[in-house]
Length: 175
Image (cartoon, rainbow, N blue to C red; front, side, top):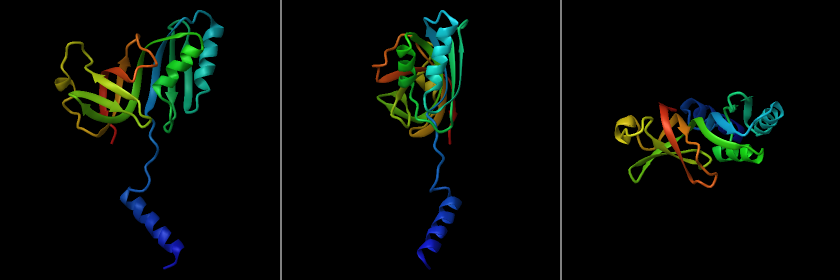
């Protein structure tokens, strides 16, 4: 069997088993970022242009009235939340709370559920209701499980934070 035939056979076998090729998965899928300090239409337009110029952004909508930037991301992107916050700050505005839809691997570290994304960002998964226990809220999670989480990031954060707190609204298995 020549090398081209072997390569073709391996390719067919890999595709049949689903083991060779996995489509790239985005870590962030959608962001609804509250932006403080936008007080005119040109400000909102500039924010829309700045966020829209990030590689991997599909659509951006900035509402001046609501002070909200909604960013939909391509299926295969490498955008991290830190970069989005820095873009808002570099535009002269203050990022506040945000709602994220993010995919990653769930792990337990020192009794805390952590979501780690392909780009290395980490989110501390917190119960959706204050005072609820993690055990009750996350009983469906399994270590090293791929999940998609929708949740809220609080307003008072710095881009220096290594672990983003994410108050969970929904957890779905990504596999």
